[in-house]
Image (cartoon, rainbow, N blue to C red; front, side):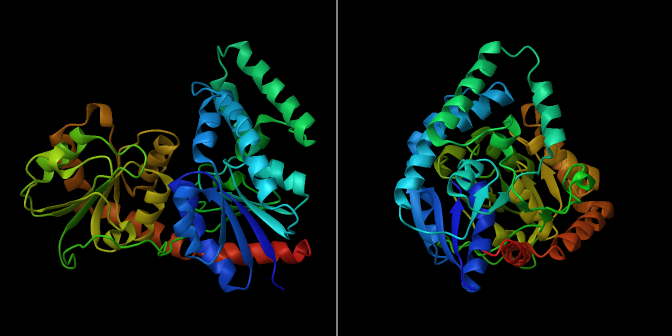
Length: 397
């Protein structure tokens, strides 16, 4: 039976992109999806057939960063500040409508609060590594050393305000940061997930949700088939590092490799000087299309990028920049699917030698094939929707 699905996901590229294949699959199976996000993602999600509703991204970001950035509890306070942006926007735009269940992001969008407010069966969409409550509490404790008491006082004040204003309880910081639900869809495998054996059967590791993303292909690439392709990208957030791009050109310029380098929208080709003849430099490329041909992927190690590289069987050099990227880099190295380098002391020789090592040592290729095969057996968006439909039947949605 067709159901109406409320999808909550403000977030960013890394939180939205893995859900697009899931939304396409839900709609192909007859579900009606109303998807809340920010305006920047409207067109991309509307192409799936979903109805898009938006919240104010500037207000959301302002609220989120107002909590502070130095301690985990400050980020949790920032998420609590976003409740006064997200919840009124959502409630106003769905007034009088009925939904059968909610799918919400694991971090952004006050998903657990909205599920309680609307009394809807809830599914958690986890685009980062999953966290058990025990592992989260250990991280929170480590982060709280020497934390000013005012930060905890603000947390208590914010949770009390949420209860008074919206009538919902917040039992712990874990509720706010991880939005736990009876079913959690995780877009990686237990092979990459740290301490994967600690998760119970309510966590479904479906692997990467790879879709066409229905994006406009506003660029042209020369034929890549048969060439030794190195692909370089720092993702969509922290990609303004001109010196890194110049270092890459010095490392691989006039080499036997064809280098495809994506530099983002904020750096211009003219900022980089003379481009070597074996380089193809674009502000944007279709990452999945390039990865189908690549022999090596030099990446910041965002979860999306890492999953996509491994899904296409491409070994990685990970240069982590922020967030969970150092842990992702550690996991990639542990599996033997690539190497980790550090941006702050990166040299031309170091990058060139690492690339030749990963390209030429067969152990990396054997490891990445093993990971690729585990990813492709995990089911992706189709498996995610299978699990959602099983959840529906259990909850009579």
